[in-house]
Image 1 (tube, helix red, strand yellow):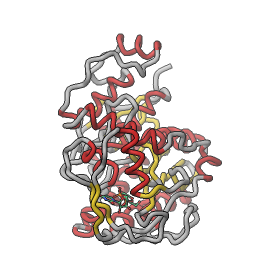
Image 2 (image 1 turned 30 degrees about the vertical axis):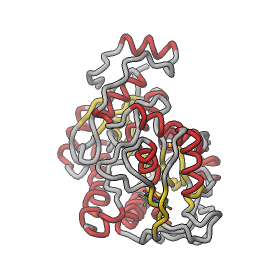
Image 3 (image 1 turned 45 degrees about the vertical axis):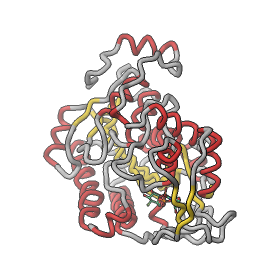
Image 4 (image 1 turned 135 degrees about the vertical axis):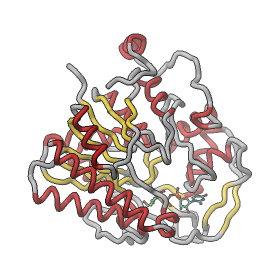
Length: 368
Ligand code: UFG
């Protein structure tokens, strides 16, 4: 049976490339649409190394309706996983129009092109940021929209746009995935997150301190009312998040309407708990300094993860120790990210079937 083709916008990025791995492992063929503004095409070579199938890269912008029409005309696409977008909170405050343009107008152009092509199955990459400073954790999906920055508001607007679309036209099947804090890397050590410049997020920063690339971690506040005074978040392994997209795709393909669901573990971890877990995983000491609170940070929040289990049959399977171990394996093997050559060893994580497939596929070439 030929693999069903799934268009993955933003598929060369951190979550997108891991989602490609999960889609291929589930029997789909991802086609990646990406501008590469915030990502690296070499991530797709790594996807090829892991799975034996390198996704075709279509280098174009989701706001370009004519280009999208050509993509849908040339490829028999059955569904779309839409991750392309801007995601830096501070940047969204400084340049809100860029966020409404790329995130909101980009999604509008995409669903219009999907409608013209008769493709009406969509998984959308949303964020727990739509809840803003939710006061009570665990946060259920019924919590009100209360985003506190343009990035979060752009995600909430897209969710509203998609809900209106699904209510107006029952042929659509849509799932919006509200990620909490995706971290970690593929267990092979071949694929992970490599931010441009100093990392803004906790896990990549800790990884670079462990590697000796940065001197110490600045803890943004240790005077919150939490277990040890530091901020608490729901960290979720990126491969669990990736597998959540596969579950959501299956759901959206069989059930019309719109589903909003959290993707989190349902457990919070403090900054110091993450640091301790990373020290155990890496065998390295993480030097710390306690600084002031970071403006805009909430003290603590984590997901109510029951809806994803009930509606998608999905739950996070990997714990914080594995998130840290996999982040460290990626960091240690690729200190320069995708600039490092692919390790030449025979990958032990490939099963026998995949090794045969690997040997016979056109690795390094497009598979469209
Ligand atoms: N932290 C530090 N030092 C650092 C970086 C982070 O102490 O150098 C702390 C933060 O104060 C926070 C925790 O580590 O308590 C996690 O911070 P991250 O920056 O990793 O993640 P956030 O929860 O702040 O942000 C994430 C996404 C955003 C999204 C937000 C809400 O990165 O895109 O969740 O969903 F908007």
